[in-house]
Image (cartoon, rainbow, N blue to C red):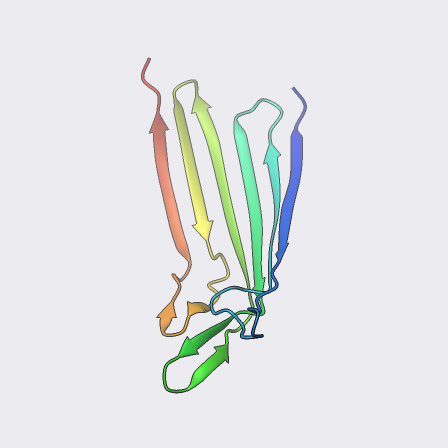
Length: 123
């Protein structure tokens, strides 16, 4: 089996204005994802990187009105390696570069987060 690369992505372009031209809150005008995945020739190693982009969102702060939210890009990476037929180790890092961003005013999103583990298959 040859090594395999997969590239995937998607984009969303929102018309965020209502019929009276009020901008809807917490709905970015643009969102996109771009990912690349690698699977080793023997199927034992898998790697993935994905970048998320959001731009053009606003939120509402009562008493002040609608405020623009900062655009952001976030990179997530993951990998897994099968050690033998029943054991696999994996790691996933979300927000690799520790970007600070908000999707709702006053509520921060998680900093860099690392998940790791071991999967055992018992036959």
